[in-house]
Image (cartoon, rainbow, N blue to C red; front, side, top):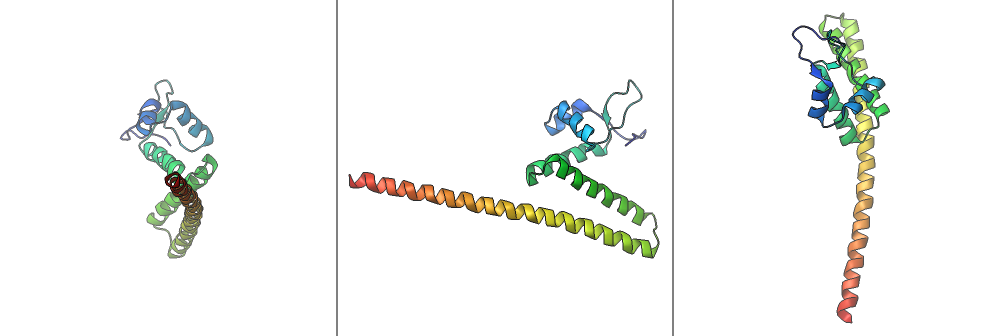
Amino acid sequence: MSATVDERSYSIGEAAEALGVTTRTLRYYEELGLVNLARSSAGERRRYGDGEPARLHQIRELQNLLGLDLDEIGTHLGAFDRLDALRDEYKAGASPRRRDEILAEGMAILERLTARVAERQAQLAVFSEELAERLERYRAAGRGARGRRSAD
């Protein structure tokens, strides 16, 4: 991503602070290709363009909300990038036939992402049920222990 004259850019420190991560984490995301830099001409310092803070926030959400690892996040970000490219192509005046292809591809991408989220939700539901069962066993054990103490 290259910065335009009107585009705001952020230092790696500003981006890291805003997201509550370290600059080392951001450099690692860079290395993995999860974020792109807009390098400034003065000394080739790391600068992030306007879109990158939102992308970094999206990475953190995918980690925290869905518990995705960085490879899975890369796959999701690639899908979002493709959706953006499809949207731009559609808006640029693609032929009616190409628009149908764009919509079909976009829907397929969104269906895959939706299925992945549903899979995670199912996994979380199972985990939540296991915790609830364990909690109930602890409660039952606690009631039994109180009953034995009062009988003594």
